[in-house]
Image 1 (tube, rainbow, N blue to C red):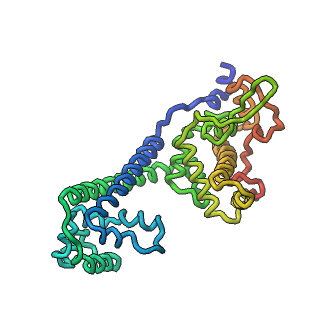
Image 2: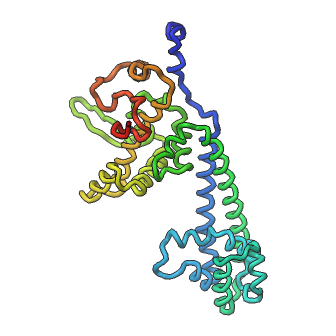
Image 3: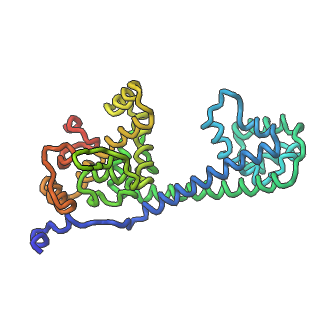
Length: 331
């Protein structure tokens, strides 16, 4: 009642459940992406059974990267051809305009080059059993549906992110795109759930759990964490290092790798640093007149005790910090 009279009660409001649909949309998108990846892997196997020549044509030579190989079966024109004409043994009987129509009817350089490659090897394609053709058609159709679902979800996420200041603040960093930013914000829900950045790191699976036994104090991995949020922070760390080569975190990551640390462990260290930056940034976006006392009081309410104010993890956020979380960027 005293806090309500001082208009401070709203600062301690706990928001445990999402209400804007961002979390549900990002989770459903991840599910659709996993289903699409599984179907693409199965489609590769069916193509190898139906026609080794088509399989080798799509894989390409030794210089073709694995990423480029995977993207071949995500091409809408090729998927339309496999969905409309799944019997690859009959492609030799089709004219160029029939192949073009089966691909969707759009004529441009990439499509015509693909048709030329197909026509060059179509004569050598031998007939196989009927079951690969049936499965190829079904899989290609389902992949097209999943791709459309993913596109629709990303459009809806883009609409919701336009008025979401948290997502927009994440996307100001180079390499942090809409999907990653929406996933991080969707899983955090509200930064007021966490009194310190240590709590957010623990919830993200990027912290260590203290194991006290008598006089001995050890640290061990904590397996109770939000795996979706951890994946999002790891993805953000990888892209941050890649697209910000001059940033001190990128240099920190490269030095750790040169020193013998595993690459994934180095990315985890960068992700832990991003947790600190984003924690301060999200609290800086809140309309709090006295953030110092807010963090101090909130830490006491959440944990039943107040930590030493000199600890770096207990330093309150500064509203004068820039969106990058660095004081030297402030004019």
